[in-house]
Amino acid sequence: MKKIGIGIVMLFLAFFVVSAQSGFQRIEGSARTIGIGANGSVWIVGKDNALYNRQGNTWKMVGGFPNAARVAVSAQGNPVVLTSTGQILMFVNGRFEDAGSGLDIAIGANNHFFRVTRDGRISQWNGSGWGPGFGNDATRIAVDPAGNVWTISPQRAIARYNGTTKQNLPGSAISLTISAKGSVYMIGDDVRTISEWTGTNWKKVMEFGEAAQMAADPQNKFWVLSTNFAISTNGNSNITVSQSSNNPNQNPSSTPNTNINTPVAPNPSTNQATANSPTFQTIEGLATAISINSQGAVWVVGTDKNLYRRTGNTWQQVVVPNAKRIAVSGDGEVAVLLENSTMQIYLGDKSQNIPGQALDIAVGANGDFYHIGLSGTLYKWNASNQNWGPSFGNDAAQLAVDPQGNPWTLSKTGVIARYNGTNKQIIEGQAFSITVSARGSVFVLGSDYKTIYRWTGSGWKVVAEYPNAAVIAADPQDRMWVLGKNSAIGFIDSIEIK
Image 1 (cartoon, one colour):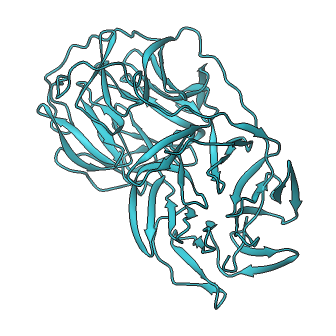
Image 2: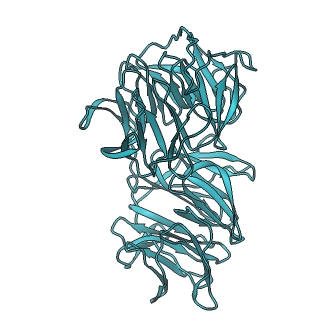
Image 3: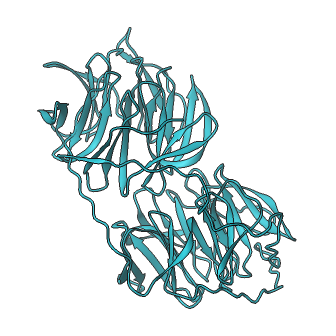
């Protein structure tokens, strides 16, 4: 390495799978996301990333979208689509039209239409464009009938906006939904508990094993998507919607036309080629951070905030109190980011303080060492003068470095970027952990905290799934190590790479 280091961690793994709540029926097809209009119209993005509408007891493909990522539905049952590249497409006068870009979208029962931008701010559609941004730190949104926005942050914290005034609420969630009646529901970060907002706190309504996302219909019945993309409902699955020609001028609402471009299609994803997720094995220990160097040495930060190195089938402790992140070079130097945001380098029994404070650190297979400053800018280590070079970039929160020495970053809202030198390129998709192997394969953990993708050079390909994942790392053979939300450690011996 170029005089930079990284650290270790301790890990344990625990899995549980809970059967779905009784009273739900399994609906044919598979879906990544779901939206329900105030008129009861149900739309999904299939696992194949196409758009489907529920018509009677079947799904009908609509619009010919090959890359839909999320869908919001107006009061009249019209879809607004967010593509995997962040483009917003609004249904207007029988066709979809470009409406800018965003990270998430939501429409309330009274057609208040909002988006989250890539910097985590919120703005409202005014009929012809987007109003001024407000708020911060949002990744997922829902809108109540009064037009107030409810948000989830990258840390899964919940907030509600009264106009542009933010109120932090108790609890943590992975999904929010608001019915046309104004009832607010969330799936807790245990991926199981569904709760309703009482006005002062959350009250448990039911449990649904491995729930990933939900939507509530106008009768306050639930449609739930599982972490394996299965669709279930405790409401009426035979959807017959009386379409309205009401056309409020503030939001997308022209009369739906589901005969756009495409005939009736098979159920979402049932005939699609998808990755057969490999089986992970559990590794003893508990960890909160992990780094694997170009020689395959695995280090972790244990939940006790000390460093550990994998030696054979055991973890060897290296006492470095208050460790938070680690980065390990091919020549064995270990860079450690401490809880107080300062950095140190360890080589054998010698240590050296590194100037500056950081949010994250990373070392590439070629030894290039970077850190993210507290303001989100990047710095590269200069080995000749043992200090940092000039800052560049912005909005970074997580970091990985490829074998050519180019940084890949995630923003706090999950925006993916790649730097060629100091030139920044936004990459499609949203992710909450990123890793680059010594052979140059780039992997991310998707926003469902389950699906692991590999960058093909032009898009993302699913390679594995690990429920409730938090952090990923790839070894030189592209074998995947995963830390769960509960700090457990998983390992997969091989991933098919094509």
